[in-house]
Length: 333
Image 1 (cartoon, helix red, strand yellow):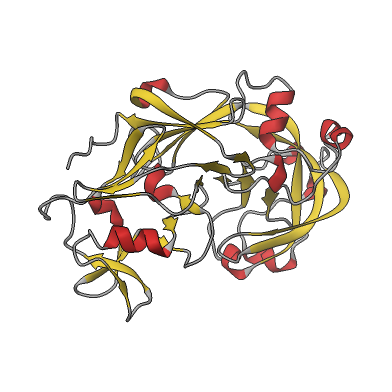
Image 2 (cartoon, rainbow, N blue to C red):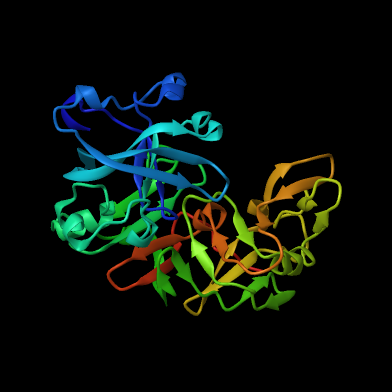
């Protein structure tokens, strides 16, 4: 960023729209090893408006707006950023330096007029708006390949993000396309969920495709449907979460029980082995699909799902596109 050319390890989050970083203006952030110091940058311009962001897990960041020259994927632009003055303890304990939101303008913590959006002086335009409006990218979309493990394709953990296009070399077959229900989150309709070949049902809510959420989060009714078809699956009264037997992988359990989501008329699956998130005791494992509870809400397809598919977030056509990947094994039940 700016004259100090500081590299920040930010998380790309399709479930939010702000870009914020830990800074020297945040007194409690002194424990972080990498923080942005606005006073060392000749290109930083402070703003006068405050921002406040709260995420679904209860974590939060507060501060004020500003603008800075940033570089992302080789593209250099002046972008509105949020300068933190206080953050929640769980964000402080993470290994990230900030979060770069890739959602829609409606999610911005500071809303602006069209004139303010064009001037980019108050941090009211998303980074995708900025890249597109300044002709930095040729298409108003980005493609995401999240990696389960480190491999030679990317050279590191995490994955590969392509702005202004997508990586056709990693896609097996064609992309399935489904329209967005609204341009707030990347929210889509998923008409059917299947558990192996033993259960198929209609989920109770639409779903947000979100790189900033680790697990898959569904309604209690949907979780009940899924776990009733998984070996040892239950809402565990002892732990208060959904669990399944730890040996219930697709290799050891007859029937396999991979979980599939219908997107754009095609089914995309999470292998049964990926449903075992964390061992709790000698028998039970914490499931990678959990519930947001009863009542109304929006479900989330998080990284557990996204690490098994290639996803294109297409703002220009108001759609999400999903494809099978050449580096992920084909599922069969």
